[in-house]
Amino acid sequence: MQYLMAIDAGTGSIRAVIFDTLGNQISVAQQEWTHLEEDGVPNSMNFDFDANWLLTCKCIRESLEAANLRGEDILALSATSMREGIVLYDKEGRELWAVANVDARASDEVRYLKENFVGIEEEFYSESGQTFALGAIPRIMWLKNNRPDMYERVAKISMIGDWILYKLCKVIATDPSNGGTTGIFSLKNRNWVSDMSKRVGLKDDIFGEVLEVGTLMGSVSKEASLQTTLSTCTKVVMGGGDVQLGCAGLGVVDVGQVAILGGSFWQQVVNIDKNTLPPSDMNIRVNPHVISSQSQAEGITFFSGLVMRWFRDAFCDMEKLEAKERGVDVYAVLEEKASKVPVGSYGILPIFSDSMKYSKWYHAAPSFLNLSINPSTCNRASMFRSLQENAAIVSSINLDKIKEFADIKIDEIVFAGGASKGALWSQILADVTGCSVKIPRVTEATALGGAMAAAVGVGIYKDIADAAKKIVVWDKVYKPNLENKKVYDEIKIKFEKAYEVQLKLVDDNITTSMWKAPGL
Image (cartoon, rainbow, N blue to C red; front, side):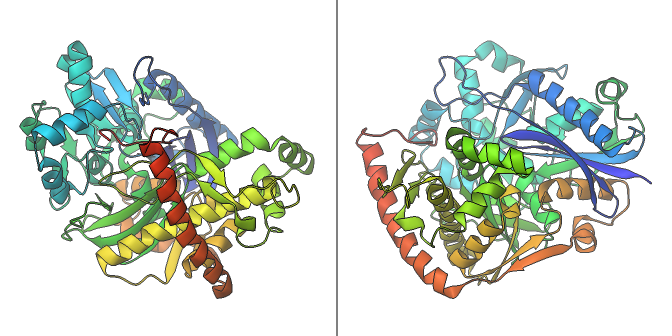
């Protein structure tokens, strides 16, 4: 039997996941990684391509070992990654510089662009669906201004998932779903718009070939074979952005379908026709989908999964011990305890991610409001539940914005990613939104989408939509409790009012923003 591999480069970890050709998950190997601030460069988030390639190779080897497979058993592979993260190369294909997704070092460059090219952000957004907040232009301009010798050597750009494929087969290319998040791209034409770069004084000859998801790129090189134990017969196939491939892995491939991906960040996405113009207020992001005729309207909730990891590691040593003794995941223990906490978590309001305000995007200082000194109501269980409720509430606010822009009604949400493993969290999402929440059998939807791309590349399926409709199997459906929704509707109002006040504290330099887009 032959197998498919997906390599998933997320914000918090790298994973290699093996599937059979029917989409059944066989094994997974994962390594956590971190992206560190560069000395003397505030708000930077470097991507360590040397160390992270070693972690990638380790995951590939361990996934094969866990499945008791050899490299030649992998028919084809693809990769997906956090979007926005970019890698720059010299003319020999050596990596020069790379940053992860929410690198925000380029504040001065964003301000310069807005002040010296009045209206250009709005113009570029109308074509690309992206603002400068996470775009590549300000970051490349930062490199030109601060590392001019390195900038002069730049010959190519790719996304992080593309970098993995390049390391495996020596071909530098990108796809629309990931490359589109640079902002140097056309939603309608699904290709680079190099003139955007030229108009602001940057190189316009670094943009390589654009391949649609599922395009065969080549085979694993001899060098990569030695590093990973993969076979040189294994085919390498173009992948895509983690959110868009994740949607394919959820079967969200038709216009009007909705998904929430609950990972390190949470994304709320709605499929729309690719000719739909982005909204004039620029508060919703629009990206190319992995389906060539579609784009996706997207809201983003910052750090939801990473906040949970922080809470686990900072406060939950007792639950970790209990989980170890019982042989279960620590989050399962926390959910058991949180399920005994009433709806609303005794009024605790977490302040972490704001709803998406893409045109002026920054966050308040991380905090919990309405804590009490009563340990029976204010404890790890109630705080944990409040974080679950808050992630769902912010997602609901983002979906409300998309519904207004896209003029659609939403009554069903497909939910996947690590968060969807939690029965309590899934039910909370249904209750907050008032929608049915469907959970796929394979919750690692992003990796499954990558495996679909690999399968398309070697002719197992006609295209991504065909693969999705034949592979995706549903596991559970959570129906909303409309009485609970009434409670959450009130909490949503309180949260938005409280967040506005917390942002004022940041504006007055009393507290420090959790994250602020460059140029603000």
